[in-house]
Length: 337
Image (cartoon, rainbow, N blue to C red; front, side, top):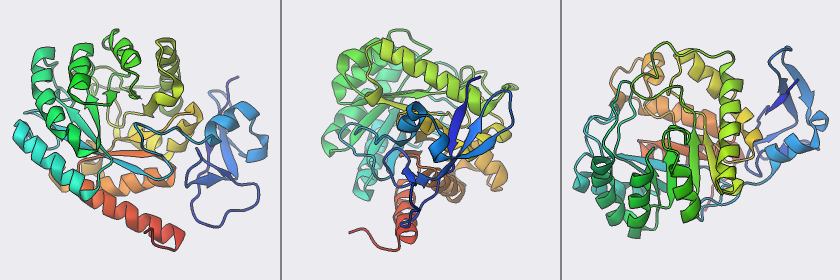
């Protein structure tokens, strides 16, 4: 019987004796929830966790593109698409996307995520040449900002063009299942990657998604794909995992993943949380328009940070950074200079 260990994350400057830091970061735990597919969950002290899973949960994470992960990092979304669910093509023109990126830089963003293919529910696949045409000029213009640039793509040819233009990370919403050549491009370039879980492709993913156990099913998928990437020549210390909030999940699935988010530290890689402006936030927050979901998005982001999530993929960069600054000050009882 396979047992999964979800650290019961806590934060704050006063840690009891024996507390273990989660991924070498700001959150820590003294107990964990032991989960399996057959037995009821059990709460156990940290001392009962076997050495190998405990090491995966606690080992400090490697830098990502030069960014240390001892503090939460913010990835700003730049959708160079005419049909994004969140901004309705606000940054479809390269000049508009570049201007938005510069505003994010000035606000203190840590990473850009530049995408040229909408992944909203029902979206159709974009031709690789058109996708590259959308993202390459933006990446080329932002490469000298000093901000790490991620290209949000499922396609090897687009990724290769983006890397040549100055991108330094590949973020694949298909979890490297769409294009068999993409992992090889990342391995050859030696760049970090983000592997995300999605059930189906954007055109079909919200048509009655079902799981046996959404938390464990997503975990097992990510663990398997991390192994595939390692087999392709990508070291584990260059891999990030994203549970894929909103990608083939109902509202209940999303909430289960969010409440159990700390489980994914057991993968031994950084966690990226991308919940910004998603539909469930609109439903629970009574915000039918995506642009009015900043408050709910920040609330979810801070819940993720409390569970030790290292990277937040967001639309509202300045507001999220402000919220993190105040969260850290309130938790620690001091200001960071």
